[in-house]
Image (cartoon, rainbow, N blue to C red; front, side, top):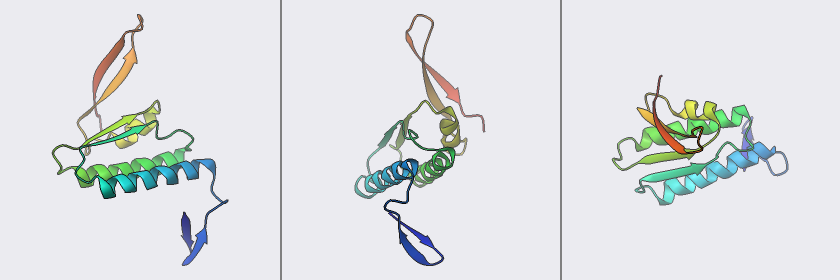
Length: 121
């Protein structure tokens, strides 16, 4: 991973925080998925914001919004994000990208419930 600062490429090995390394890893995986699986209908992410700070979570959400926008014409595209980070879910769940999302929870009897939630914005 390299950063460009003032027109100079800087090797980031040893300079990145743990969160930045996690984000870089996710970005590389998404780039590979986009390159080799362009006609695939499902992109699944399990807890993508683990070890990410708020700024890196926001960067990931923006990147996912771009993927959603680019794939919106693809009839079989679905993005599945499993997360406990509700603010991240709200960042990627904007009205322009989707109409609803599914909220999974357990009721008082520990039975799993699926609730369809409308995207408010």
